[in-house]
Image (cartoon, rainbow, N blue to C red; front, side, top):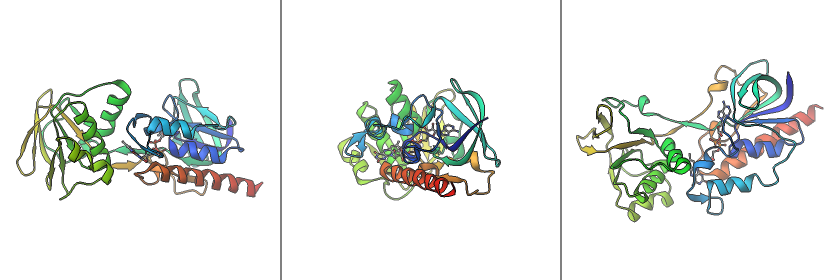
Length: 285
Ligand SMILES: Cc1cc2nc3c(=O)[nH]c(=O)nc-3n(C[C@H](O)[C@H](O)[C@H](O)COP(=O)(O)OP(=O)(O)OC[C@H]3O[C@@H](n4cnc5c(N)ncnc54)[C@H](O)[C@@H]3O)c2cc1C
């Protein structure tokens, strides 16, 4: 079984920053995607670092990336054991168990899906999470059918509202709070595009058998729509370590520790995690 000083799970901004800071030790960085970058790769809007797009920002993070860090791309970490081993499975990597001294979990976060919400009706074709639609549009050139409704007016909901409006769709945002969430720069789309905002309301029922035809809000407003994007929140992805009792060899960083709206905080946390783990190893030598 191959042994690593540090196994890093997740090659987004957090994992890449941790790997850079930990280089010099034997580090394996695993990501289930075909390239490093995580969610940044689908964020083609500007607003990262020095007003860069997500992929541009990632390119900058990867400049002079240390060759000593071993990469396992297209590789999913299936499990982590209390005995400090992990089971990995990937196209090039195969199915292999590795052992490690330290684990840095940088697995990002996951979206809350429609199925987790108390909305009546069926789940017809046309219901997506906002992040799924962002990946479909930005990575695959897909344009959904309008009109569209977005549930949730946080940053992701607003970014997607702008994106859909730019694609020519009629968009309604439904927000259960009394005012719109999100950062001021993302709220700007509300004055720049004819996006309708319904605050103090939520979705109660979806309509349509095979395909979505509309939805009704809790206050009884009927909204005809062919696409619905759920943007009600993100949860840190901690499933792999849920059975572990916070061992001292485990460090979490980035969105899998806590969801961060700005990438700089994620990078900083990744750097700190990598440097602290490297230092802990070197002190013990
Ligand atoms: C839609 C959206 C828009 C944003 N817009 C901005 C913005 O304009 N400006 C800004 O500063 N910030 C923005 N952010 C925030 C910032 O981009 C993110 O917080 C940051 O990129 C998250 O980095 P991360 O490494 O924690 O997670 P991620 O980028 O999600 O990386 C996690 C990685 O872990 C991998 N992974 C997970 N589980 C496993 C497993 N079991 N095995 C192998 N690999 C695994 C995933 O494939 C993924 O590549 C945005 C975020 C989102 C979601």
